[in-house]
Image 1 (cartoon, chains in turn brown, blue):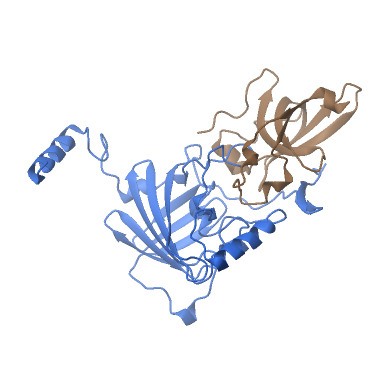
Image 2 (spheres, each protein chain N blue to C red):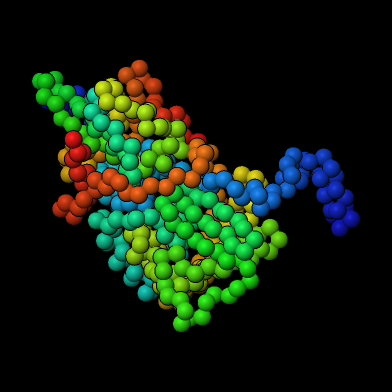
Length: 126
Length: 244
């Protein structure tokens, strides 16, 4: 079962703030009352605009795989934080903290990404 | 304390740098405006949203709305969930997570952000064009002047900002915007924006804004929306599957 591979954490999130905005779409699609921790393998890192994405393949204990689409900010926002197009590569193992889609589909907003050795990716915010 | 004492203290402060406005630094000049700036506390995290405590003062939560203004706010709030924006527009670009640049020339100051929101602020002494020669646009018509080290910008003919960006205040096209921007240290620009709108406001709406340096950017970078995977499904956006 996929759920056994990640912890469902009910937590207050920055997304719960009603005035959180960015210049593309409303955050209403994300369930700001929840955060998930997913560990998986990167299939693709899209360094793009208006959002970057990490496609993360999460394997359940029964061996089935599910690909999650993890939305991030625009590539320039990531650059400002120290990320680069090569920061994440296909095949990398990542642990992602995600605010999930309200729809229950395998997608969400990425709020933190750590490497297999526990290092937070991309450097600290300025 | 009499005036002579105050002057004496100021001379001492300048001599030793302890109480001077820009202690240890030369007075900022217009050349110091170069570089990239961002709204204080609004730096986007990897999610694209700023961290906790971010204060978007220009969304309008504290504005002195009239009955018409409140009606507009309620109507726009109801339709945000499935709305998209292509940038910030004016005035929200002046209180956003998008780094921006002030390009100061003798006759004009350009304000540009990473979303390609652009304002042309003419500082050559001209007035706004005659009413028959202008029409409302997303960024409006701006003229400016320097009062010492303060850039004063007067903007009119701004289309209802909420039409461009669903979170913007739904001001009318009769709104008049005055900004007073001043560099208070080499890493800080402070602005007071005063908005008057006979249609949606009952009094001038005064907003204090601060810009600090976007320290992670070494240059202005623009890009188009080359990978828009957001699409409305059952009244909310969803993330479309990635292309193979």
